[in-house]
Image (cartoon, rainbow, N blue to C red; front, side, top):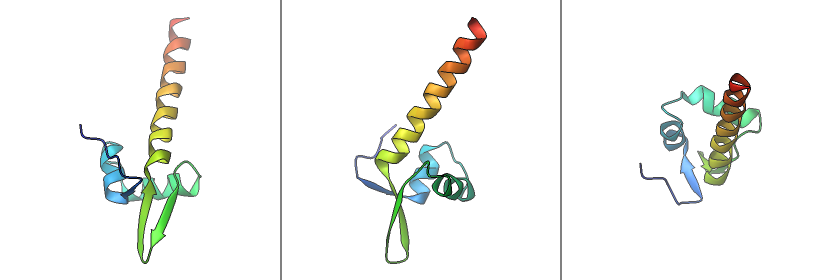
Length: 71
């Protein structure tokens, strides 16, 4: 998988990187403060670092659940 190195990505690219989540879910994550965005005119872009931080938080949560199951 090619991961973007640009500091900003489109909402559609963020959806793709999150496994095809819907636009509504992306906007929920923005509202919850789990993703950051900026606008340029009428276009909204996701701050790539915030997307990767969110993905990392999912990994940590998954590892914790797996650890609890094995204890």
